[in-house]
Image 1 (cartoon, rainbow, N blue to C red):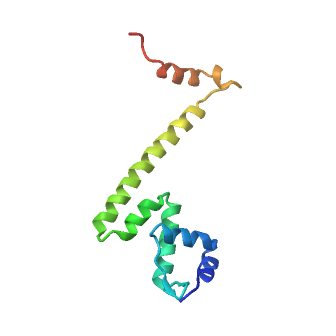
Image 2: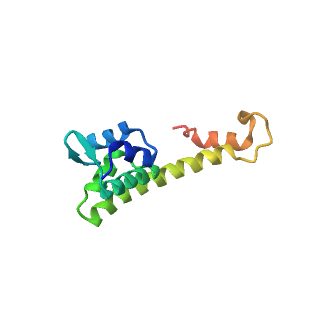
Image 3: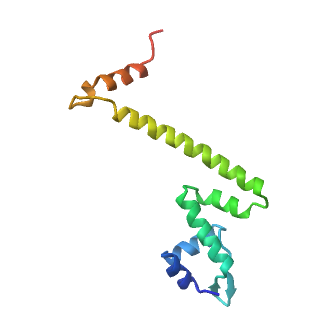
Length: 126
């Protein structure tokens, strides 16, 4: 079993992060008196939390996935997150399309590509 300091150092985290995750219901380390004691299973949970955060999951979804009693429940959370990511990707691609027009003007406001995008956004007259 590892102390909170050992686990935090191993993962390069401040100890308050592990305490916060515990308060959020993501970790439940054993106690030896008033000290937290982390098992190998806890280390796996920390790694799972970090991977999930890197994938953009919020703590609520991570908690749901970790607490899910079935693969189906975890797939539902992952499916919702995938849809959010696809929407973010579409938004980023639209932003790139706006910025990457083949404009030779120094001023984006004078760029025909940008002007065309502006025209598409103006609603028609009633």
